[in-house]
Image (cartoon, rainbow, N blue to C red; front, side, top):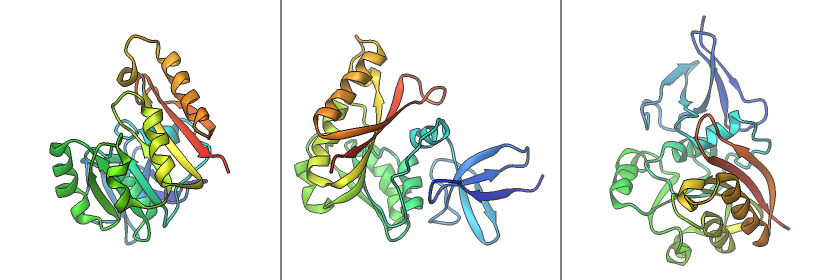
Length: 232
């Protein structure tokens, strides 16, 4: 069966790739043709190159497959990415926002930051690495400015507070937030559902409308992706 690529029916910058066995996978248009980031397959068709987007490696891809209803990203979007790690998901966000967009990549680990810079940011002019603690947004306030979307994927307690504190400084009015809540990083003594509800109440209390909660299993255990929007 020949390979095919079709734009996602609802989400700008996202594609479906139909593979030789008839299965389909998410993909993004590669901003750096010839280079992959985490060993993902590259598919070239009709002069364009696509990166297969692995939902078992990316919580944002998992959220799409699990029924994400509203897509906050677009070409030209400015994104603050908290917990960029080695750039697996951040690089796909980079593909989606394109050369006119920006992805400000906050990462605390020096070792991980070196890999992010050497393997990803050095080849993508729209990704700006920021070595900082996401709990201290004042430290990078001078270099970020206002953004359309904040994406938060950190392995720390008080994850909702971290998103909200950054939103107070950086998120545009009626901007979106996506937060991957990890129950075991927040409180190992409580049931995941209790942890998630507590964090979501923090978001509501900080002025967000909660648009959707998505359980990410089977792609990630005890994780929920929450889509929020600043109240106008």
